[in-house]
Length: 111
Length: 116
Figure 1 (cartoon, rainbow over the protein chains, first blue to last red):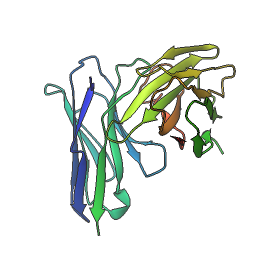
Figure 2: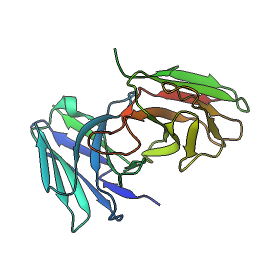
Figure 3: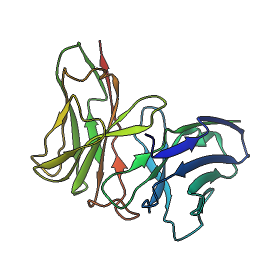
Figure 4: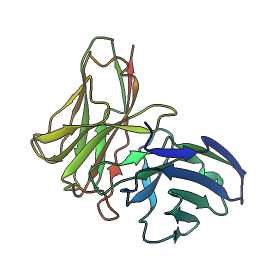
């Protein structure tokens, strides 16, 4: 059973556009929500993370929006660039020693 | 140059052979993890270790074994009992046993195992 559901599976965006990836969860004990970025043949790298006490966190062109009541969170990439083309994973943790990952979104930014 | 190293990057083995994947970290992290990545399935936890000489099974431990004799090393053995071992294997570490904004997981570059 997938603890964190991620959509879409793939996404194509024009350069300069906004990329939006959505995730949903059921476990209300989750209290840490990171996003990872993975380039082909590489390990995932932490991109940005949020805790449920805030509804939004922004770092440069990357923003996490968090809706606690809906148990949903999303990643927005503003002014998307070809260099952003990668696979993005959302994840969630309850403060234990395990991260539950979404299935990933392959983003392609067209020049 | 701090970080997590995994070797080899590519590994080929014949069916029925055991194979050991290396993971070393010099981040002085207490916790280490092994994940398996398959297309369309995200990352699935195989084993994790919070401290030396102790480890726990993750969601898909069957057919795998680990050891944690040193803080910086957490090798994974893929045994012949693993039914579908061909995958991308990722090692990770974190500073503490709890996943949080200050103790998040950092990943190595991965090992792609192909069983022929």
